[in-house]
Amino acid sequence: MRTNHDRHSTLAVLAGVALACFANWGWAQDFIIHRFDDASELSTWSRLWGAPPQDISWDSAVDAGGGATLGSMKITVDFNVTSHATDNQMSIGKYPISDPLPLSLLPYKALEMDLMWGAGSPKNPFGNYGKFEYGVRFTDWSDNAFGKTNLTVTNSWIHLVAPINPAMPKIDQVNSLILKLYGKGVGSDLTGKTTFWVDNIILRATADSIPAPRMTLDPVRARGLTIVASATGQSPQQSIRTANAENNTYSWIGRGTTPVTYSFTIASFPGTNHPGFEANIYLVPQAGMLNGDPSGNGRIQWDSAHCVWINVVRNSDDSATAHFIYKTNQPVNNAMFDTPEGRLGNVTSTNGPLGTWSVTFLNDTNIILTAPSGDSSNFFLPAAAAALFTDPLFAYFEARPNNPSASLNTGQYATFSRIQIQGVATPLDDHFPGPGINPDLNNLIWVVLAEDPAGIAVVRADDLYWLGWSLPASGFTLQANTLLKPTTWFDPGFTNPVNFGNGRAVLISKDDLPGPNASFFRMIKP
Image (cartoon, rainbow, N blue to C red):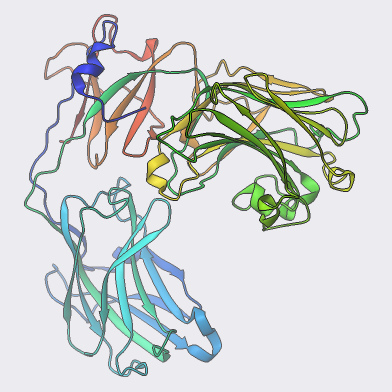
């Protein structure tokens, strides 16, 4: 899915389907988050982190003005650098920051609030009351405290203004407001009870109009299991794993002379302009899992003590290589992956990544790695290591961006038209004919493990297009029509949009089209 196509070229590929993009927008207005006119406004505030005891309350007697009634939010923090050491800090947050989520900050030029520090609060060795930070948290739970001040005044309201940089990463993916105060650092130690009040939290609007999203309608490139790197970051978990936890017999160990093969067939894959993007198979015995949990506590290949990893990447010359990598006895660590001991072999396909990649265990230790081109490589797993991979064993299939410049590969995807496990007591062979979009993936075979479950979709034979729109799209809704009449637009009922980096998209089948001859879509902000 690409959201930068010229609209005329997009329309040229359609077969009797018209795409129209209309937008209705107005001038941006200030977003008043809180005046703290009553105690109910504290219901969305809570402690985020920090060891010192923290208390959030409504103070009806203290007010900075601006509201309909008196009131402000009062925070007390009992700092103690000796007891809490490096966790001598506080952070509170408001979640959600808006309804609906996420919120885009693009229409706003600054985050403002009024702040008053209480007399008697402890000072640090620099003679001030600490470094106060305020900002936002994003949908991936990272944060940006873009407003900072070293406090020196008590018993007097000060007005804080933090400019919003329109180039801020993830500026349209905000879900929370955060306030922080550090009581440990070089010369910044605090011990004692800090008290402060907050009032009039406002996002100040720019004078510019809110831009309308840009829409695309792209034909489906491949059908099958599509795993989109739709969560942000270098290595977000976007995978499926085998189910059947109690009767899991997917290990190759103890099969005698019966070969066991694990394979996937790649039907689509990002090009060389997206370096680092990879497709993976992980083979993990439950005995080595952290707390025996096959869902992992993050990334399964990091958490588990034992892991076999089949890693497929496209090379700069458009060939592709599969690497056989493993580790043993390294829970919450993967240093062995980068050693000669842990990297047993590889095979390259000059035809690129598309086609079937397989790893076959001829017995417990003898391994063949095969590329779509038919090229193969043979090597051996040490017997002591192989003995750790007995049943129950889980197989994981994944696509991930794996690029330090995470935005370069965010939104890219790989499509698997077939996944097989052969030679075991209960063979697995899934061509992914459907049904539908996750969570309708066959749950008798698979479990979804994804930071963004909507980014794992089964593209069916009758799925025709990805209907997409660019971001930001805060406040805009999708509508459909069969005629260009202003009174007949309706909600098409599409759900589970997928994040494609700089845009979102939904799958549209033939039956989803509003009309047999002409279909129109638009994004509109009332």
